[in-house]
Length: 309
Image (tube, rainbow, N blue to C red; front, side, top):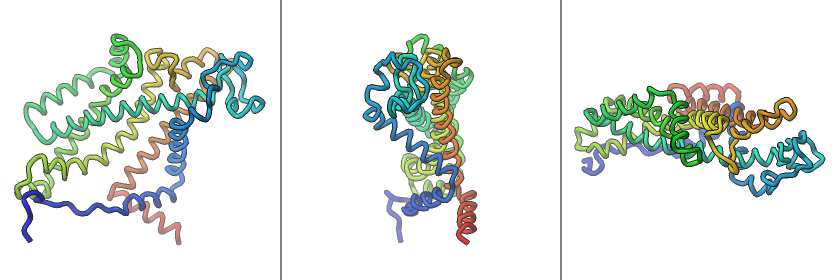
């Protein structure tokens, strides 16, 4: 059967049962399942938490200044109150929205720019590729925290500037990874076969390169999401992140550090949320990488067969 010019090397049909297989594998593995549940609770709180906590997170109540975790004043004060009598639980919920929004914006922006530049640098070797890689080397030559401090000092702290500087410092991670993946995939026989049958560079990139690079990018993005949360928390802790009245978990740690001896929960609980989120992301990203890797996924199937017997 002859092959049309518009479809010189059709790919195999996608495996529509793959997500269901991954779901069944996830249910059999307690560690990534717990990590998924933690992340779902945090995301749910970030989306719908503002309606649940009401004004307890923003309205001062001086009668409850630095109140310890308790049940007497309702569920909102289960984790105590801050130095202005605001609910720590409510502020954790609202802080989750800002923290996740900043991290998501930075990751999406850096993944999009870095992935696009990596595709260009890997698929079109030459002067343009060299220029892109030299610019990447310049960014990587400076510590990311130092770049963030300088840019935020010049532009001023704020959510938009924070997202921009965090994205710029993470672009080289995606760019270099995609470039290496693309240069390796370009040497595979099916790409050479598609090129010999008349496929253009754009078609090869869209049908072969992008689908094979995306799983790696998503895995890196999950791990990088945790790194961005830590970086944002550090900048907010230094006073160069989100400014009042907005706040994140990092700024909550910064505001609570002066009360460590008398109200430890003000700094400890936001730190626990940062730890739980980043650890859950790392565990889930590592599990997805192993479960989707054909060279490693057989371990999960063997473990599931062993448990069933």
